[in-house]
Length: 503
Image (cartoon, rainbow, N blue to C red; front, side):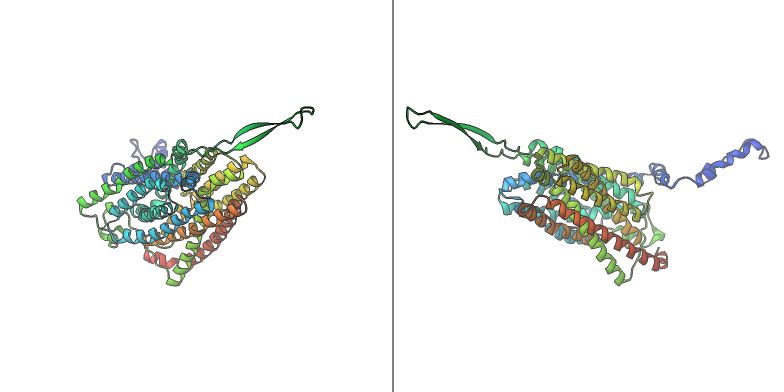
């Protein structure tokens, strides 16, 4: 690096001048972890680079409010049951409908993102997600709420698929920390959500008692006998006001979606609004920095690609079963199994999301120091140990153990999804709207049956089935990961020379 060299004033034969040649040597051994930060600092003076950062900031704000919407549903689940007057197994249909909508929305949204103007698609998808959020608590008829959950997740398919692809299109292989930051902002919003909703939750009614006195006398010459009878009276359940909380969050989320509309008009004014970056980058000899980095193109043999994607789909299937169901039924689980109040159930949900957020915050830095294999191995070990801890703590009524276990679960699964996306982009195939749609289909299928399984078993048998099912699924998730890593290593080893040729 010529900028770091030093030209001494004295003669080069002067022994005192010799140490000044050390700066180039120091720069050669600069830790890898500082390179990204140095590059950002050097490029901040570039207007193109600054616009990218502004766009990233807007995406993070939008992702924060998307997480806020997602984080409302777990603490609000009991109130949504109250509004529609159904039990847990029937209420689980809300989450099943959401999974169906998510699967359909991911397929349709991924295709729309690839074929239409991506920024307009992201804006419409994000805005409708906010609108349907405001409508949900007003659906007092059971089937109308089921349908609204389906539509709610259907309209967000494009946004969920597209925002992840936007990261890799803006930053390419260097997008690992930016991807972690996107999901960090999402989980931060989900952490705040229970506190936003808490003032609007209906309170659990306190059982009242009345004492009734009875006096019997069979004859004036006999002793009079008196006794009291205590009667328990169940007062009517207070009305829920969660629609106010949902409305506040929906308005903020709707406003944040305008970042994509602004980006659309900015690109349109430059005449590049319909250019797909990965198409524009095919000719790397005529490449504009503002179009984003040149993404490495890899092509696997069809048979190996199908097998690998099938394993990835199974991986995402079990990941979603654990990741989505854990916070969705958590408040219900502790209220019914541990006899905690809704307020503490909501705060436990917030603790889950707080650890989830902290995990992704750590992941932004950690992902640059460890391999993906090491990353996922740590997550699997912590996840299984925490699920076992939750099962034992709930069985023996150890409240502190439940808090510790929930924090461990949140930390373990928080970084898996964003890290798996950059792993796919770096080692296997390019991410696209269609591929993200397939990934979200696998995630949606994971959340399709799980709510029904847990809801019905909790009603028919015991609330402990929440823990039994999630522990079993965590084991299956870890086994799938081991098989996937083994296959990927063999694929990469065998076709490494092909990757280099295409890079």
